[in-house]
Length: 178
Image (cartoon, rainbow, N blue to C red; front, side):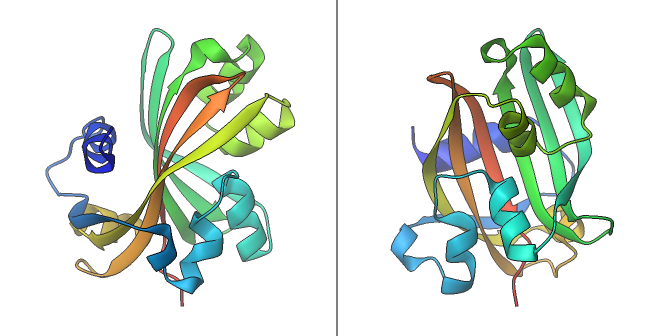
């Protein structure tokens, strides 16, 4: 699938009056600025990358969510542990049929970042990096990430395979670095 079509598909899960982006462009991984490269260009959980980069655990804040049978979507913010400092914006679309009831219950509770839940439950997983994005923030993303509208940051789209099945589609956008 075209990364920008997938981006539209994920962002359309949570429509709002204010646009999330002014512009989003798929860029080659090699052109990702060095300050963002270790956060985005890898096949690991962003939870772990953010914890490593910020030197502490991270907390999740669910902005919005919807559940349709076993199809679950949520819009989230990751925060530096114990603070209100937002370090990542994300949208997750998850087919919960690929995980156990205990994992589903924890995900739906919205108290622990998704990556940490999958790691803690030792869910067999593989992360496929789909695209790196250069993003010009619209009013909504700017408000979430506490950055100026029109400011530039970077993100990624990825798919998490759980037990060898494509279970999770992700949009993960870093707060500006530096």
